[in-house]
Length: 305
Image (cartoon, rainbow, N blue to C red; front, side):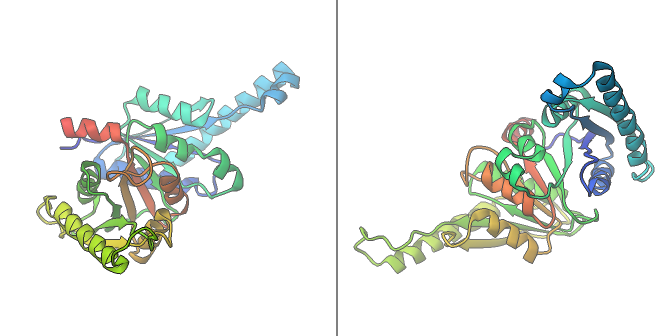
């Protein structure tokens, strides 16, 4: 069902304190798929006002020194990868998200690995490179968590009742190591007390939750569990008016001691099994573990393969 991963592309930002952890996670993903690992560092030039007033020769020297320094650091980064993996690297100049996507196309990459950015006021407003990649990447994006890479034995998968949510669960079953656990997380918002409703509001809420549970159980039951894998664990969260969806996902990942959160991207909000925009970005910024986001276009290709 799934296309093989032959090239893993790691976006390495040396300005991040945890860039070495990102490289190690990328190496683990490449090893898991028997893939080549391509390291990319993108240099952003000075602000246009600085370029305007800076001496041309001095600017060229500055950029040349940046590139040479980045190449040397990429060589050091390659040394962090265990033997047996083919590692290539390059330094690019420009806007990080644009250059990373260009490198994905040139290298024929099947998976992007990027770092988990520390939340800041500027990134909340402008968005980080990871945020932009989540919105436009043609291939899955693996956002390396804050912990050192290890076997992926527990995966939390937020899912809806549509085909994309089911696809994310199947992907999680393929990604979990050994007899690890995949937990399907379904969130449904129950209605608050409705002034216009003349019936029994509490009964209505109970009936909605019961119907949601029945649909959820049916949805998960249709997913074939590969031989040697444990049955999918189900968890239904109702009444999300009190807590935002992203917080529920993050809390569940923390309580489950998850190694990975895996979800499908596409559309807006919590549509038919999809997460994008504010929910996915908040999960990526604050999850206690790594995150794997599956783009809608990529999933369509996998289904057709």
